[in-house]
Length: 203
Image 1 (cartoon, rainbow, N blue to C red):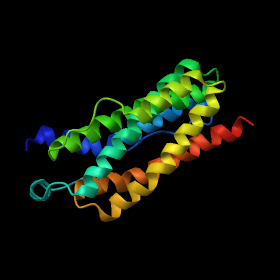
Image 2 (image 1 turned 90 degrees about the horizontal axis):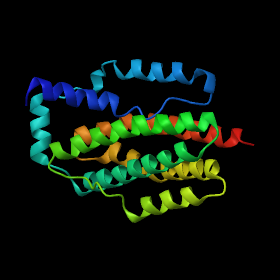
Image 3 (image 1 turned 45 degrees about the horizontal axis):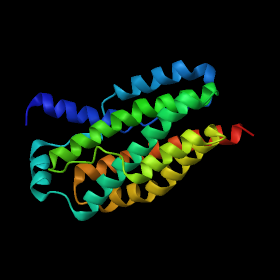
Image 4 (image 1 turned 180 degrees about the vertical axis):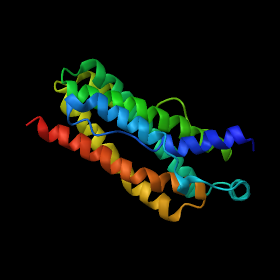
């Protein structure tokens, strides 16, 4: 494995797992985004695996639990990207627009990096959104209150996948994927709080 590849992969474990910053203060939105960018640049020693460990993980492959996690996590990322793009077009609330734009940026990066992990261990993730994602996209496009529908869909999705991330972090066979899930959990909680605060703040 080349040094460039290892560095790129280590970068994915640091960058891809930061899903959002807290957009609740619209006046601090630009500063908050800058803070997240700075955080992404910081090294994460816990994400370092030796080449021997990576080769051993590759030989072990992916368990059925690992594969199920990859598929569900990828679908969750697609859903959040699709509904966030619609929200950007439809919302008139600057805080929700900032939240949606941050979601597209960081979840988009996380999706690319999760795709890279899957490829490293011989699995291709779907690129065409499933029916559930397409239906959510269409529902948001027609919603009378798109802001409420958008935030509700984000909260429902995070609630749905949180237990899966917990299970993978504790019981996943592949150590690289298990660490990805473990590092993502606090980001999911932060993401949930941000969406919840925006929803409550609407009154």
